Length: 253
Image: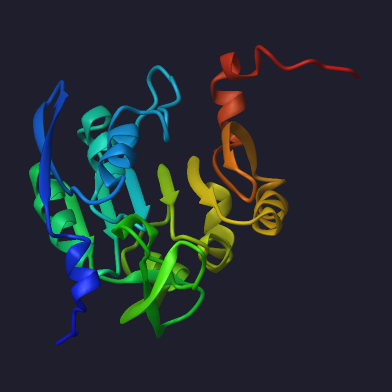
């Protein structure tokens, strides 16, 4: 049994509910209403942090949510792509409780109470200084000294076990572990249609750009702060399949 500190408990002390309406029905999204958690989940559910790329006829089959936390991204995507299969990875026990409650409504989501990483291991997860969206494997200005030991799996091996050879949409928000997860996906990374991720240092952003340079193009970006932003990448092949994506390109050849 994992010992939960009073500070950790406080991150989940109050619960609020938001109704999310979709063509397939309505979702009752529950979240721990502590500090600015509500502001963040509302942005996600409104499509401001991870806007859907308009691709008429595009079929989303699989969505992998790494760092799913309480499930806002999965619920937002389920509202748009109700036929997709969702795989949610979250190592924090407190967040997983909310995650399970929320995504069970989709009928097509599976929750894995583990994190993804560059190897199979266990590591301390630092609790957020003010709320659960700040939980991280790395100590920073946004974490406290409180930790819980969590299980991590090699991202590529986990995808092999799940037989996920092709991923339609991958989202990674792991408060600093984005690059190890991407690198661990290996050759599979080239075939992912869309990647949403939050980077947590300028060095990471540059290394991620190098890693994706040949296989993906930047479709959207929002630099929230110095060293912090959310990027959206799409597979190069989608430019051929959907020529309208390139209408704003200036060709200097």
